[in-house]
Amino acid sequence: MTLEEIIRHLDAEVILCQHAPEKEVKHAFAADLMSDVLRLDTNEVMLITGLAHPQVIRTAEMADISTILFVRDKTVTPGMIALARESGVTLLRCGQSMFQACGTLHAAGLQPVF
Amino acid sequence: MEFNYHIEGGDFSRAGSASSEIKKILKQLNVDSRVIKRVVVALYEAEVNVVAHAREGEMRVMIGVDVIEATIADKGPGIPDIALAMQEGYSTASPRVREMGFGAGMGLPNIKKNCDRLDIESVVNAGTTVKMTTFFTG
Ligand SMILES: Nc1ncnc2c1ncn2[C@@H]1O[C@H](COP(=O)(O)OP(=O)(O)OP(=O)(O)O)[C@@H](O)[C@H]1O
Ligand SMILES: [Mg+2]
Image (cartoon, rainbow over all chains, first blue to last red; front, side, top):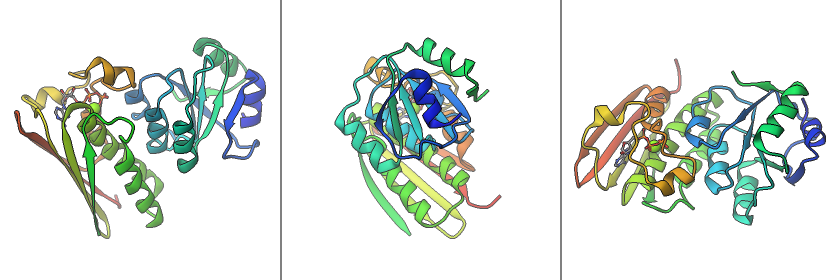
């Protein structure tokens, strides 16, 4: 699925775009636990999370995650955006709950990591 | 090449900045991206441990031709039982640390998984030294 399809399926807001809309996103992983994110072996993953904190951006940077989707309209601070810009991470936000966002994207064909 | 960074305990706004600098350096050196990920994930887990559990620390990273050696030494409470701390799920993290998505007790096992050699020394009420080695090839 492409970035632009993900945005369309969720009517998501693009907070910071650092990739082409046609960028292919193969897998997604949903977590509020950064410890879990840091254990992933897969690259090219989109992180879906309800946790809005600078450490989420740092974790994505270390784990080679290029896109983060914040659910439930979480507040993304200017500090988080600056950090994401520096590390090349695209930030999206949607109003749906974690379960709803995951269900919608899964039904549309986005694959889990495992 | 050798690099040194200071890590401030409790300062979650800057947690990860040292590991981030090392990531940039390894990228510039054209190290394989899978190796970079292993190295920086291990460094970041160790850096976050200093921020979450200790008062302050230093990260010293030596980059050789085919090896990276990192020592993260902190002043803090130390780890009374290292074998126990190495177990998945063991954590003494505060509620504040847990709110930030950490404190699952997976960091030390994840460091072990991501480096080729891991040495942990700790003195209770003094501090902890984590030394990790990763080879670029093989
Ligand atoms: N630098 C340190 N100083 C003092 N205690 C430490 C240090 N690093 C780890 N510990 C102790 O070892 C435990 C396990 O560490 P580990 O990194 O595996 O888990 P965690 O930090 O609690 O959670 P996670 O890493 O999953 O976010 C910690 O909860 C803490 O009690
Ligand atoms: Mg830890």
